[in-house]
Image 1 (tube, each protein chain N blue to C red):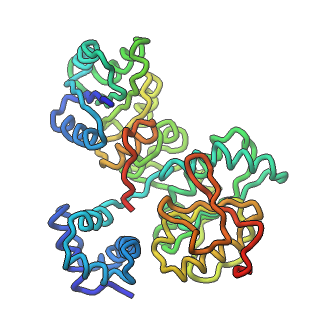
Image 2: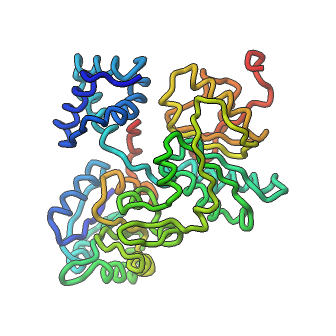
Image 3: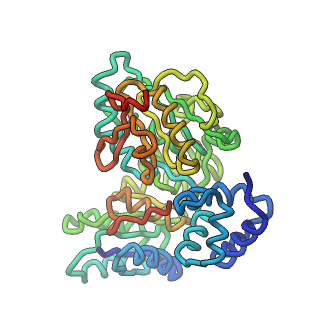
Length: 278
Length: 130
């Protein structure tokens, strides 16, 4: 599936008029991947159908959303902050009481340029209950380019400005020319691996914590359901799944149960599975 | 909530001011550290936040932050350095002097909002762009 030339040209024109940013030919993939969540939200099967409606109705709020989706590109550290507060205040301390091997296994399933797995590790280091514990962190992404960047652990000024507390920045990063490099000891704790969520997972063992945030929005219902079903199989019995703020399992895979965690929510596999899910 | 922007560049005060006004702040301005102290002394209601540039004439941002920290009656003000100074030791110095956060110029509106979120200073919940 790829975006039609008509749709691409329309989006290009809107973005150029509103933000002066020019999307060169070749950026079709970017347009499609950024707009797919908006298309899904508006109940369109694909980006072309969504753009066709946009070009007919020209709803200013919808056009603004399109421009924002295409002009915001850095991921932030501690994105949405609440999940990381929940880790530090409740989830890590609870796991610290129940894991006798002093090891916690974490999977960041769509790690992009690495901000998420590193934020999780920095949060673990700030959790007194985990002093001396090992965090076994697997970080995966579809894009090898993103994985290479994540592994290099080098970030621009604009990237370190995003959501990274100054005290954390001076503690975990070193200036390296115009860039900031994450502490190599922290980077060495992460195993980066390419993984396509829509394909069967390779053997990975069980995880205590899975971050699968802001990625299900890219998939249709059947694919979401299939991914959530397979994620269930890699969860430790009392494992915690984090989804994006706009995502939920309800109506997609009801074998998950939503549990409050501070100002955030996590999902746990229900102890009694609904019959249809067996 | 109110915020004080301390920067000798009028353009910078306007940019930061616009982001803060959009976030629901009422904005006060000063062109250097001394003027900022005068502004604070004249306020019946203190600002919750001060965004402070480092390099300014008359009184620089680091001195201003040090001065604010000496005054117990101004303890409620959250101080964020907003500057082009990006060396690690500068950041450490600002934090040691009492800055609560540090934002390096240039920055995007989202970056400033995320810093306010870290500081618990978002007056209204930010809209979820997704």
